[in-house]
Length: 481
Ligand SMILES: Nc1nc2c(ncn2[C@@H]2O[C@H](COP(=O)(O)OP(=O)(O)O)[C@@H](O)[C@H]2O)c(=O)[nH]1
Ligand SMILES: [Mg+2]
Image 1 (cartoon, rainbow, N blue to C red):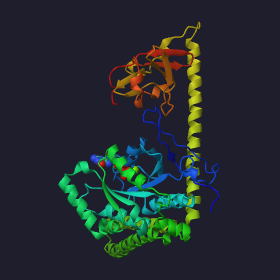
Image 2: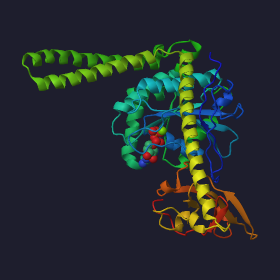
Image 3: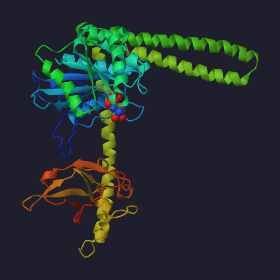
Image 4: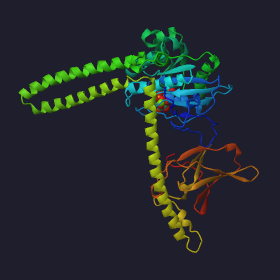
């Protein structure tokens, strides 16, 4: 076993009223000690902790479900591309329960962006590493879109991979959950659900082995009632061991020897055979094209051969990657995270230098403009291209406020308290530090305020260097928000 431990991204939940409610501790792989705390965002492990993996096809609603339970920003895909590339752990509180629930977001198989080998490696790395640190899953939610008329392609592939990852013993902890009921009629949905449950090759086998079926209606209540099932059935012995954990951790098998790994391996071999056949045919066709001096055909066949060779090369690469055992998976993951952190550190350092330079220039400008010591307000005006001082304002829309202020100002919000006093609150800074001239298309940044505690409209104070400017909030919704 490696002495290092994976720096996993864990997102903690907090009150929905919090101004800035997401934080992702960045444990350095070299600093952190091997401990189950790495899987719980630094929290102490408790017997009552509940770990639930959320799996299913890309777009089935895994991240949406998790964000409904945790009130956290979970990257959600709004086009065909997937968002969840890595396993992410999200902590949530269940009202009326003292248990900490950790929901584990996972990438789906048969994805447009990643090969099944990569996805399996990612999931296997998390499952084996957590298992080694004594974390057992208390449940697995498998999501399926009920508006999918047929179980084909990605749906079948994911279900098969899911079954191989779990093994039959773990199926009693699975809740097969359908999403997107808003896209089908009750009758249509019920028919499909019935078909899923009765057909052996779909969910029949799962249900026979103790899996439950649940309809998720894309509301928070529905999401909570799904999670509460696991809370209710939690006992000190309710955690399960998945087949892949048993095979890789307890039996020291390499990924390509596990059931899930074998499945990916045989799919790769099927593809390889197909490509080799195309290559052989292209070779014969090329002989004929050469004989007939057909240059266009030769050109097209060459392109096809190149394409097939590349694909076969990729398959060989993927097959090699499947040969990893648990230690190799972890070592390579740590190296990957270190590379990413290093890249981020370099980018931040570059950004910092750029910002310092701009700050120096701004300071110089201010000093010059202050002449006899009296500040000129022009310097604080928005740069050219900004329409009016409204952009320096808060805009109110129910309990959401949009801060459109420029990055170089420390924005402090004055909240009127019922006793007539003000209390100031520092607003979260926009994430990027850009020069003022490039700020015009700044994204509105929504945040929440304790509405009931506001006696009068808030005022925004912008401090820039030694000058400050007070702006009253605009009452309307900002453009584009
Ligand atoms: N209409 C509808 N859309 C949904 C539902 N659940 C998720 N979505 C949308 O489906 C898309 C993909 O969801 P996401 O949670 O990223 O799926 P993931 O890839 O499984 O994590 C997003 O645009 C969601 O807003 C649902 O029950 N009904
Ligand atoms: Mg996702």
